[in-house]
Image (cartoon, rainbow, N blue to C red; front, side):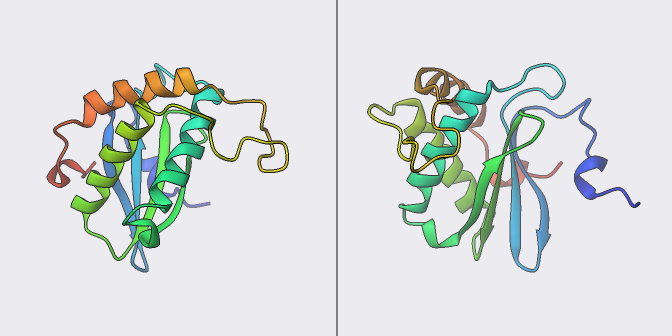
Length: 149
């Protein structure tokens, strides 16, 4: 079996940030690295809440029609954002703005009823806000020219 591109990234030197990991048929995949791989992991309830808030907020925003997918990495160090017909600057701006939204979010997390979510009990808004706030500090000055691994 051939190794896939994401397994060729050297996780021993990878730091939190925003990275373009691949482009397939016009779909741009961004790795939203929130923690240091193999050192710190996102707690599932916080990660789940970030997933809900990011997806709802971003899809309802001006770039919503460009979003193909947003979801967590299995290693629990960040998220994947797949977009189409966008620039890298648009992706960085969207990520920065949406994590800022999450860091200051107040209210009920969308999609967290038993009817709407397959694991509706596992959410933690307070922890999600802490994670998002810390990540905002990391990407505050991030620019599209930094997105290469």
